[in-house]
Amino acid sequence: MEVEVFSTEFWQAFAPEAILIVGLLLIFIIPNLGNSKFRIPLTKVQVPWFLGGRRFSITGSPAIPGMLATATLFTALGMMVIESVDGNMDTTTVTSNGLVILQLDNFSRFFEILFLAAVLLASMASLDRIPAHTFSGKKSLDELYDNRRQADFYILMLTTAVGMCTVALAQDLFVLFVGLELASLATYVLVGFHKESKEGAESGVKYFIVGSVASGIGLYGLSLLYLEFGSLQLATIAANWADSTILGTIALGLVLVGFGFKVSAAPFHFAAPDAYAGANSPVAGVLATASKAMGMIGLVRVLLVIALPEGDTDESAIWLYTLATLSVITMTWGNVAALGSTNPKRMLAYSSVAHAGYMLAALTAVGAWKWGEIEAPGDYAEAIVAAVLFHLFVLVAFKLGAFLVLGLLEMEGEVSRLSALSGLARRDPLIGTAMFIFMLALAGVPPLAGFMSKFLVIAGIVSTSIGELWMNGTVSFSDLHWVWWLALAMFINSAISVFYYLRIGVVMFLDIPEESRRKPLPYGASIRMAIWICLVATILLGLSGDTLIDMCYRAADSLNLA
Image 1 (tube, rainbow, N blue to C red):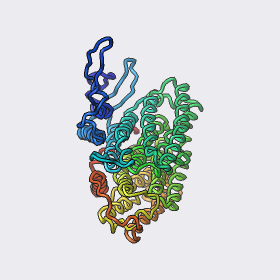
Image 2: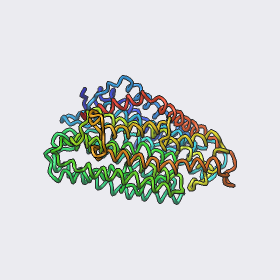
Image 3: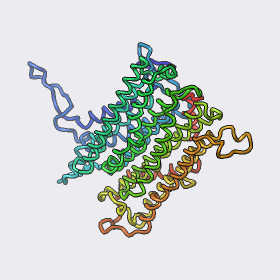
Image 4: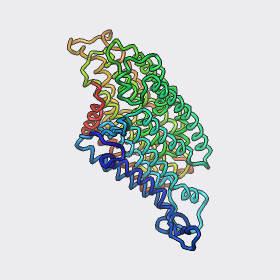
């Protein structure tokens, strides 16, 4: 179904996204409601203006922005989940000139649900991590800081969600870039949000500088694509890609730099460890999950929709070898760097780099199949894409859950060393057990969701690389396609990662707590609830993730790869 921008049908189709924008506006308006009046010029008549003046006690509470943001995200997410049950979404938004700018289908809706789930959990946790102090009396400087920036923080969180949803829906590379930058600019500020922290301010500046350079390079690539094809419409570029010149290939490489930064792929990952370490943990969790998924959308749109090769005569598919090399370097670099890390958030950052390498390997396998180098049924490629989507979604459970546990610890002091986790299982057995389960899931230990996601990705790559060789009854190493070695690299790197994930378990269960951390953990009802949600999802999606896997297959089918 085609709908015109801002028509009645448009608002009906994109009601959840409209709710996000309305919620964003409400956070601007409601906390500023007061008894101000506006005097009509040249008269003494004063008309109530309600914006400014002495704030109303009901709407002036510093807890209002957090409550509004959480309610907005929960409502929009609930509507999206309900609409996605039947799986029959297909709405295209066109301008008056007939340009397609937004596409609502199973693929875009899947990522919107992922984004809102991650931002909602982070917002819930932030109700305790950056608490609103509503009690009367004298407040400390930190409490005044927390109250003053409530609206700012949740405005940035909702802006991030709106930008990410725009990226998921975009069918025009310029619209995609606008959504990417909207989310990116908000995350730059969120990383350095705690200005009183030297580490936070420094990491925010680094993340902004590196991100700006990556965005500038990507924007230059978009300009070259427009020069080559006369359009930034995904469908138009994809239809004419086979006839492109070397300029198109150069433009593709420049665009991939921008997306490579978002997924923290080597060599564009250098700002990620500092950003994760300096940001507060819920924000770092959003960067490690939702922001990475946003970058993966760009890679899928560019590599699998635009530049997917059309047979073995397509010489432009040389990017496959580059992507395969980058995937191995990324996963190996991430895991090796994590081995030597003593900062838990920095270790999780390098872990995210490694996971980016796993997903790049999967995209390489799909490209090799389409190039004609592998004789395998089309549903094999669809299975790989579905496995990548499943992996991205379950990362929200155990990767974000791990960051939220660190966020709970941050409520009593900095978490810049592994020793901050010492004796956590003794201090709070439930939280310690939850953190250990998150580490096991990241390591890919069965029967948790992390094992299932890695298994599906590796199995998809292996099945595609072997192709129809199974029909012969025997398979030798000489018969295997080079893509098979990517699966082997994934397996070896997953084995390496077990060491540093289990090291956290050893510290939590066997070490003695630091002198300053022997009291019970802060209560934090909201952040604990978010942790329990992540824990339940990690276990259930590993034991029975059929519904989610079905959603992933429907989303992959929307790309029409075969």
